[in-house]
Image (cartoon, rainbow, N blue to C red; front, side):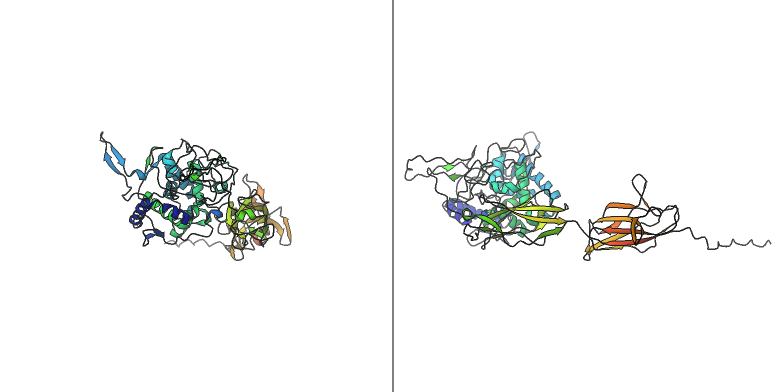
Length: 575
């Protein structure tokens, strides 16, 4: 795709020349990790596109066209200047202004990610940079009060004619096109990606790619998947490339990111600057409804004329010829079914990562495997198990041997069985289900953290509380279920009806405690214990899920009065 876009851009020599000069000037001050090669093109260190960052692998935009306008060379920092009335007025580059509602959506998404995935370190300026490149900040902020675009923003239909080939995956639900997918909304998600990445950012109960709050939050989660840390340049580059796998796209976004980091300000909705140059060589287009292919007219096209472009959105617009061409066959078209590729039994303890991964192969009717097919893995059922990175859906492209390996699963706290469903993106074939099991957390060893003898007088209270530490295979066993019972003897695990006891919340006597759990360090301190009037030696048995057991001895005895009292000082002789 990047190469094809480059060929299209070559047609606009003047624009390309200006862009090259701008890139050269920007590289030293605006894009971190960006240098300029001998031809004036930007290159980014550590920015090699990853194999799975292709349209076929389920990228955010399907590698749709984007705006190539670069930020101005002057500083975006606004400076106050007096107005006619003497009141300071913030002035700065028009490019640095972001429509108020759009800016608010970016900042709210950043705040949400600080709580959901603090290790991602997502800056709102990155969302602003991508929003600028994808849709010109929702076409200059043409949004309603709740953040919904006033008219749809659509990319070109991805029919393989100069773009990626992605056949319809949503029945036209989001893009109005039941033949091919189109990127949708201010952050330009293709429907197949929105199906799992979509979020409700404004709390209205809907996930709408045309709403800037929903789209910004979805983009934030998309960029923070795979445990990326966006404060790290390599991870930042990988995240951006996964949004649109183009080196030029990466460099353009990095330039806007650095520009917005230097300063920006809020402007009224609808007054933002809309870019004019796109990676497919076309200028800005607007649309009020999705494009619909026209039926053949039977009339030959006039020589020397170009077909009318389909109305595009922030980064879209594609030719709609009078006679629709037959779509080229794709690897996906040849898939007859999915088959297991040697997946081992999937079992993990709560909170742990599954050691085995799901492997699925795409197979033709003749039994041959198919490469370059997008396989979507979805975790279904009432479970908090996710893929590494916190997502419940992952799309993977089959490799040269026709096999797609899902990301590692991370078990949640809910125990029991769950299902991971594999489907082919863009083709209706039977789903392939994999079963997985999450078992409860366990410990294999229990030990007291202290060795003080536990004694008490009849009717009194034990001075020390019992504290234990649980381990599993010598590692800390946290959040493990524990039961503590005062038993009759080591050989009789029946609950004792006399001797030491605990108190419940109402102060009543209890001799069995359940629902206890070890803390993050594997430790558990039991409540204070008391004794009735029965003297003797007693046993407190502590057990954990997994079978670890510890017996603690308790002694109830009368106070020792055998020691002779200290003699009183003798009276001194009278003088």
